[in-house]
Image (cartoon, rainbow, N blue to C red; front, side):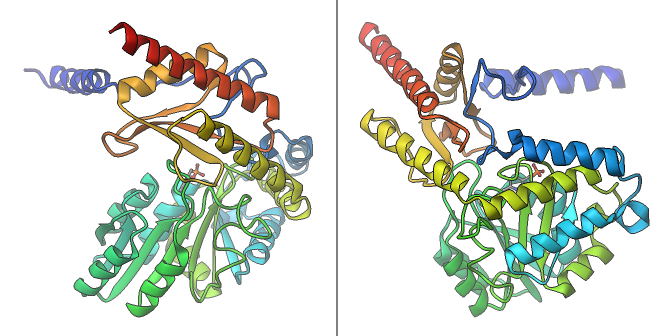
Amino acid sequence: MPVSEAWHQRLADARADRQQTHRWRSRQVMANGASESALDFAGNDYLGLAHDPRVSEAQADGARRFGAGAGASHLVSGHLEVHDALEEALAHWTGRERALLFSTGYMANLGVLQALADRHTAIFQDRLNHASLLDGAALSGARNRRFHHRDANDLENLLGRIEYAHKLVVSDGVFSMDGDVADVASLVSACQRHHAWLMIDDAHGVGVLGDNGSGCVGSTWSSAKVPILVGTFGKALGTAGAFVAGDAALIDHLIQFSRSYIYTTAQPPAIAAATLKALDIVQREPEHRTTLNANIAYFRREALRLGLPLSDSTTPIQPLILEDEARTLTWATRLQQHGVYVGAIRPPTVPKGEARLRITLSARHSRHQIERLLEALTACQREETACLANA
Ligand SMILES: *Cc1c(COP(=O)(O)O)cnc(C)c1O
């Protein structure tokens, strides 16, 4: 077979496999972002800041003042005062000495793991950690082990069995597909007993959890207990980008050695300006978190009453585990016909047999909109019962 034909065949096989297993991923063109027609219960704009006019205005103003892009990497000439101000505000917010901006959370995780870990390092990850953490570990060349989800005993077993010069324990703060929160206290004690460092990726926690909205680590755990804290701006802060917060020595090390920090163009300064505004709103206006929590409580109460397969999550991520992949797609399609958009999450993003609708709530949702979601879910339930009765 000629070479190019082998390539065509390889891609065709991969596509066919995705389709046959109901795992085909497709994009939805949303009418200019969150449209009015479709109700968005799939996004991560938990506080509504992506649509807050004050944040958009800060971005527009930033673009007028600093231009459309940074023009260079941070280490060349792309590190502007607005980036520096944002780093300082993030360090203060999370109770850390310093913070460092990255262009995305994916790059932050790659950059931290690659800069800290090597083949003399063992990395221990929660089984349900975000893909970027797994990819970062692979890139670092470290030995990578996974422990059972939120299971500190399993982690301690592994930590005790494996002798490596450096051990790094890594966990999501809020798990992105399940919405449950890491047991940080248990992770901290396991790490202390085994002289390991702890890294928490709180992408879905910052802005949402904690007294000052700084997440499940920021205001609760010092950098002595959680030396490496990662947060992102694309979720509750409503913009784009990410940060790592920790001691000055950690940040200096990342500036020297983190390749995804060094070899990329700095985040557009206008985005930094918008993020600074979003951060200011998060700190000054706790009412958005209050509204969000009321929405979560209302959804959970009604969903339980309807007998929907709710999980234990108390965060804005409220998965309904439907298990079967085809069933999950059927429900998602039906919901869309009712004008409600939710994520249909299937393996390999989640373990086999745990396909789910990933429903996310926002402070931006009105009571009436959540009622519409619940009505659409009821319609899915009713239709399934009718199908079973006819079968
Ligand atoms: C979304 C997410 C990321 C990636 O962040 P981006 O800024 O979107 O690249 C990393 N970790 C977790 C846990 C996430 O949910």
